[in-house]
Length: 223
Image 1 (cartoon, rainbow, N blue to C red):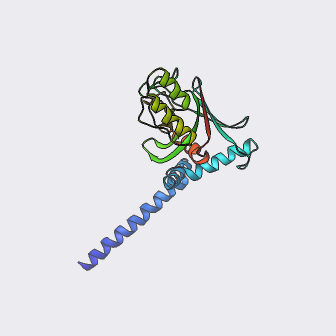
Image 2 (cartoon, rainbow, N blue to C red):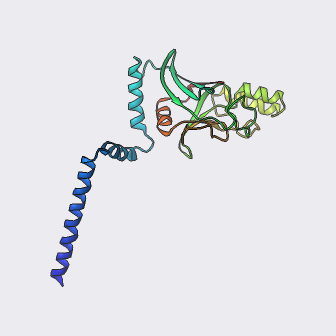
Image 3 (tube, rainbow, N blue to C red):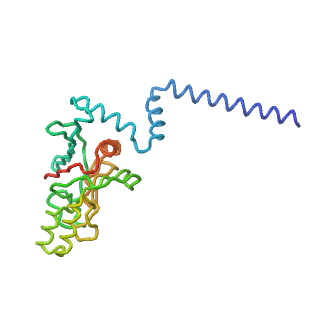
């Protein structure tokens, strides 16, 4: 009985060793080995930080900029469904985007599914968001609040709260009829699909944005 147990143990040990060798050779010899290895390292870097920083450094180098020279601005062109990352007059990167389900026109209410238009800035960044990574912009801005007050969508007191948040570089109130929080996140740019009017990117692109663009960066959204 003891001899049989030893044989079974040896059998399982050698079987495991052979199986491990076969898997290793399959990874090394398969034409897809690059993708397999890349996916393995991606799992170790789930939010893509190391890859995103390296890729963005290369993009800066291609336009002749260093990190010290980089003066980031985000320009979103709704009609083109395109986001440009600028440094003064230089285009450092461009990404396809998805908008709200009703992309044409100015955003007036939180539930109108429109992407806003105007001048904003990145006011906060959130890891572990339900759409991968999230960069909040300070919508509604004072201009949005003034428009909402004139059209009696919000009350004058709410306009003052939004104005105060802008002055303090803080996230604006989220409890008004104008909606929010709204921003830039992942989960795909194949179509206009966001319910709140946020701007959606492919996950690899929101990773580049998230790890290379600081809070306070200006965001211009144009038709």
